[in-house]
Image (cartoon, rainbow, N blue to C red; front, side, top):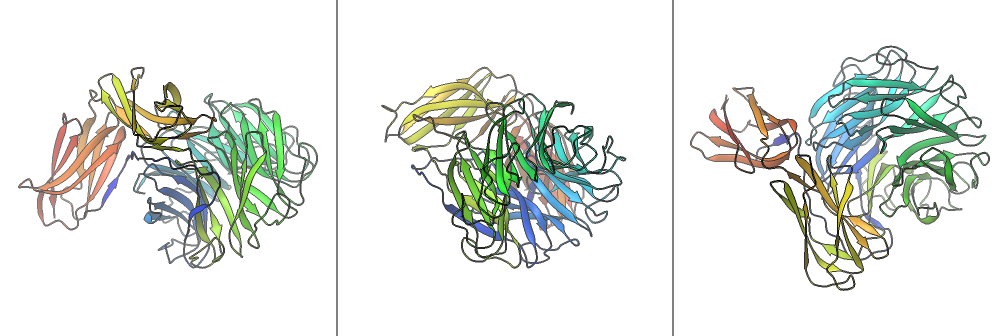
Length: 621
């Protein structure tokens, strides 16, 4: 089979609700790496049911392959069977570290990294350490990359896509030249807004005369602004209200990067924020770790605790919780869950207090809180050596995907490759709804989008909230369909439909939120429907031509569309075919022609409605 690399590939998947289950457990775990140190920073579930993972590696063997130098960025794509689908080693001869990765609306990925190299994959270094932003397509091929910074040290820690098709990046900088201006002294938060091709739209240095570290967390907010967290030891410049030593520092920016408000949170000791997220009602949830037991902090169990703070929309504290035991506990990632509660991941060296089940040395420690901050459950993951969790996200089935590191080979951990490995853990859902739902599907009929779905069984079901999105990420309610089951329960197949006539965009994403009678909910798969009357395929170019190994097909698309790409010989015999859902803009397909015989071939590109058919000829040398 020919190898094909696809830009702008979006998958539509089927998702089944399972029978009721009310407790967590490890569904699967995998160690990836080589004989040296490998540590994962971030993992996200992909629409095809797999996962994308980023981190860094010192290895040069095992799963990793050829390293460029001392420390490289290592990105792996896992398929739905948790096997490596593809991998990328990126970097130069110095230190390169992958810090975060996100899915992009075109089906690819955007990664934030730190680099000290100026060779290999890295070009145009500004000096010292730089931000390195990398845009990949769905197959891991680099579409573009940008080096950002000044002559000092600049390290990117978090990146997120924005609603305008660009990106927001945060990290730290002690530069005051090059791309960086406005430094307040020592380290500042450095927040950079990029357009869709990585060009700087604006940048802001935030801080005081001390040191500010913008940790692994920035997010666009519902009003179009941004929320960023980290820590500070300043009490001047942009910073006020410091409690002593290091404080959590939370900054709310407007859409142009101007400060709307800032909050220093903590006590007289060290308080270090690592993660922030906007909550469903417009407030914010912040997590990190704290050594304090005064000021804003209470309930410390000894040494450092997870410190979780719930803020309202203006940054005022609604509640705070110290979680941990008598030893060191440090939170790295927090997310709001579909039930309105919170899931937190980090590490623990404790064996008492809120912590139980430690396997030895440090464990990854997962904590689930309800919406009021009360502890619902906690789980220690690991073996007899050092294990930790860097990130956590909720998955389509309401379970959790955890990325971290481990040098154990016992307890919960198996198949360690030597030293530290990427350690990826999937937890089963702690609250799957008792509805067996068949996949959501849909079709576009002129100015009407029709959705269809069915359930095999239902128990205690209220109905289905229908949600629509223009970008596949930010959804809003557009309707509600009541259950057809008697008293919410049925063992028969029940079919449903919904018609949307209120859309304006040519491409729309849809999903369902199934709601139980006790208020619990879960989400369906996502489908993308497009206006079939809108022409989609524009210019098509094929290069190089003639070609020896790889033929690149560049397609200009007016909107997202299903396309079929086929390679045929001169007699019309089909040698290779592939159907893809490509995003609007420029789509690039790379076809492996290395095994074709010398001669002429056709590449055919056909739209799913059959109205557009483009044929290009190329020659294999």
